[in-house]
Length: 322
Image 1: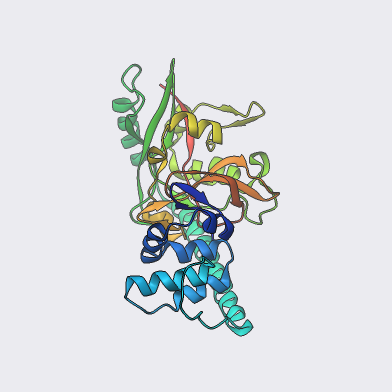
Image 2: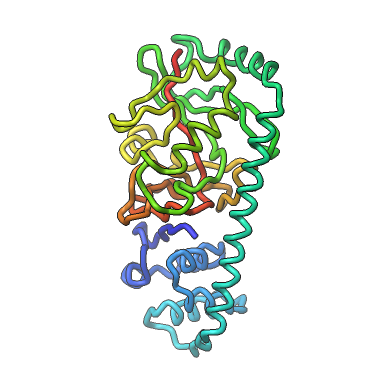
């Protein structure tokens, strides 16, 4: 599960120690009611605490708050501690989690193969003609500006396997070209399938975007309009991800960085909360196989998460000639 922060009194909470130092029972109670507290504990591998919290069966707010204080190790509560978690419980839960991960990976592989097969079998001439009309009406010099949303290319979205027009946000216009990023998280794809690297230059997601996604999403005429970009001044790509500096430059507030996942992404395992999703950046994280990402609340996860995660969404970016 992706690591994300809780927030108590406006402070990011990354550990139980942080939570105890900045504890606010009202914030924690709301996170408990929404289920976010349990998900945070699971993401941080606090098995004992999240399982004990799942066992709370009271509907009385005070009783719930007292139990939360005991479980989270906050002084001031005077209730009996729930029974300790035994080793058998922990082992069974890990086995269940491993099975879920394996099922999601199998589902992703099957859907990806289906999309590739559909792409090969489908005659794209009519789709290309329709796309060209959209390009002519939207991508006209001096006719688009920062903040516009335009349609360009096609990819499965509301109905997995069925191609639909992709919506793009215009992030920048420079001379005769514009920088676009997909409005939605189009799919859920690991940054690197085996988690061996957190570098953009040799990761699986770079290949997926510039080969598999590129061939599915764009007709021949559309592909000609996509400029080749020198990513990080060392790599030439048609499609890429934003890095931390770029996401902070083009999205000036966390609210603007919030993103929703398509049904296609959800079908491939995208994790969502209140309809928002995580999405990858191309910046390496703080550890050997960690990659930066944007959290569901729009905060930038600088520390990153494991590159092999299959529940993080992809928001392709590209420069297009206008």
